[in-house]
Image (tube, rainbow, N blue to C red; front, side):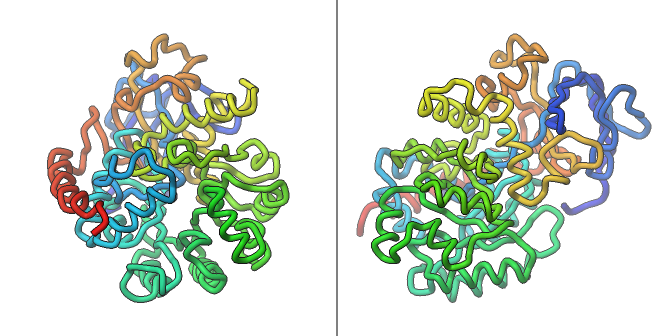
Length: 439
Ligand SMILES: [Zn+2]
């Protein structure tokens, strides 16, 4: 984050949803200094701080969106009511014509939407990620940005995708709020050499790998026909699977594949809205993955397939789908849903000690939620986690902070003007939508 230290901040006498190991919800003061929480409890010192009356707010950890393509903002609604095959046909056609400038415009809109919805960290997969990184930095979010890697003969990127990813890592390595990483797109466009090259590159730079995995039956069947193995089993066989990886979707898995993902410590980004809307047919085995030792986070996927970046909406959908599918109302409780969106998301990003909860020493990424908003009534402390998981609207989020710096205040972006972003998106969409029909 550019600039000097932010003014210390005290949120006094607020309802704090700590997400600490005991999952305490407490009435407390929160003091933030030098980008971190330095006091959570009664009687926080107020010297030199801006003091916010917290009595009408809940303090909630910033959400972690574990899978998205944020720059696709101008494509919301462009390919509805078709399955993944039809969806990708349109999207590949439009994507091939994108320029770095409109990727940046899209990323600014996507990051703005996420910040206004209380998301402070996100895991992205796309190309022209420098543009996404610039948007992330200028609006003040925390980005884990994966450069899309695929076979050189299957891409519209200039040059070799793996080399492009390597240069991207070099350019953004060591940045305070942007972590560059490597993102093999999926088994349908990546050969064994590409997967292992990506793994080697990520290891060399000590960063994460992010990829799509077993999203549809078609993907699984086509890969099985080609290689003799289902995608996750094949990735295990070629020696790809390991820790510091986040696999998005993971819908169509066998028991053996679930065990392998758990054993290898692969993180999972569960994306229920996208799976439901594209009619992937199955439901990700979230409970079995967790039982096998895999940590599961929650992702929205892009606004072209979701069509929202709201993590509140995603928690709601995730809970309902698992309960109904399993005929068991007790699975994925409100508390577990909030865990997916906060501490578990932080864990799969390798940042469990830094992000995901309101605890002394952690980075101060959090939201102030209006307790007087209609979707939070009755605002009883014992119901706040339930409201977050099942009821609350993004509109209840008043302010958002990343690294202790305000990025949203009074529902307005602090570092950018939404009207300006909106005009740019409308202009970008004008061109992009013209390219959606087959030529
Ligand atoms: Zn995706």
